[in-house]
Image (cartoon, rainbow, N blue to C red; front, side):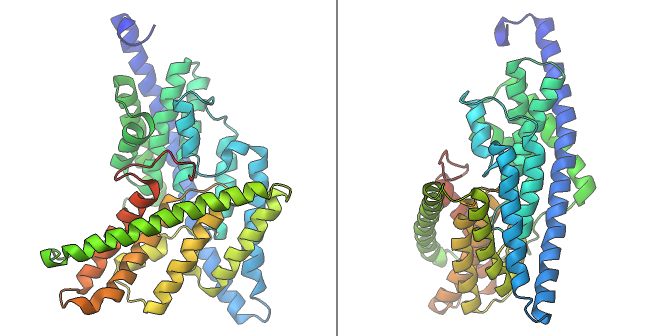
Length: 391
């Protein structure tokens, strides 16, 4: 019996067990997710060192290409050992909630961690949020199973811990909670609410032990936008909407192309994609990777030359969908934020002649608006990710 048909004592006991499972799995998610982010940060530094060395060494230009290609191919090989570790992972969590598949096995966790570290750390334009969400969900499932909970409580644990994973990925506890109710389940009940609040809170707290207690991005104080510029922002929204639709089409198109090339081993396909991304890495490290560094530079008001901005936009616009089609662990969210910020800065430079009100503060505002607007355009919802297969 569940819900209203349960005796009060059994209901209270069930709530306690839900909280206990959520607490244990939340701590594990915080430590695993925090370690995953720490590894990716070290990998970012390593990529920059490799590029610096290659520029000073005869023939060294081949090293970044081989490095990223090998990392991507190895990540794809790891996924073959645990096929559900491919892609974002968020779609897998939602499929479990809909009852289409069983909860992910424990093997997803090491495959996501190692494969994601290699793919994203190697330079593919992918986000950490997908693997972290899926690892959190698998930790919730595994914890509930070890404690011999029923199928209903196992699904609650995997769903709540998916939100904890998202919270850790972006250091955003409120975002993690909203993700569970608005995106994954579309409903609220007592058990799920308790599990989500407990797991998200503990996951973020323990992740901060590893990563430190600070915001992911810092933004300076920005002056209010003049109302006279609202038509310009409306035009920016139209441009971003069209680009978001194109980005989605490219992502789906590259995935379908990869499926048509199934006769080519997946490790070879991933290696070729990695080599292409490695060539971009050799050109400029800011053109590849998850994009946190370039996002922060944009939010700091860094003055990029317009040709450089356009180069970053074009490369990241193509490399993101291409990287996703490689079939390695990795999501779309973080690269979208970086691309949106760059588009905001590019739009400001392209239109700055229109009005003396187009100050540096407007550039930062457009970068922030670009981050949220491109995300909304690609996922096709103002505040939540769509159910599109493009994830």
